[in-house]
Length: 185
Image (cartoon, rainbow, N blue to C red; front, side, top):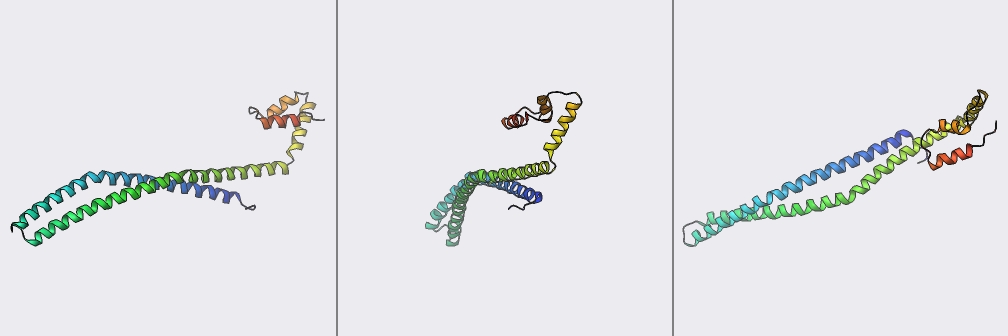
């Protein structure tokens, strides 16, 4: 709003910066989780293959009465469990991938928010300075300084203006110089 203070503008910048840091940290966590899950797949696939082998051998033994039903049931349950863990891991990889993608799409928005808050803060500071300058009648001070310089034997007005605006001229500063370039004593 209009009555916002410097502190409030500063807090908005800090909040936006924290949101960006949080977003970046969350993305890093998702990256790490995604990689770890993907890395676990070969091991899980090997475990499934092994459990399938155990179950097949259990069935072969069971049908010739070389294995009791409890042991067969255990071999089947083991295979089911390992297969389920593999499927769940694949689902988690997919979900983590989607979350990563969402985060990637969201990043420009989070960065833009910080940029906007920083611009608001800079604009507020600039407006404050402009107000101060207006309040202090800097125009009068510049005129008085020029008159004193003339009285002290001169220098050129352009030279005087270059002293006030030492930076390489932007278009706006050039316009200002033009506007100011016909001072009357």
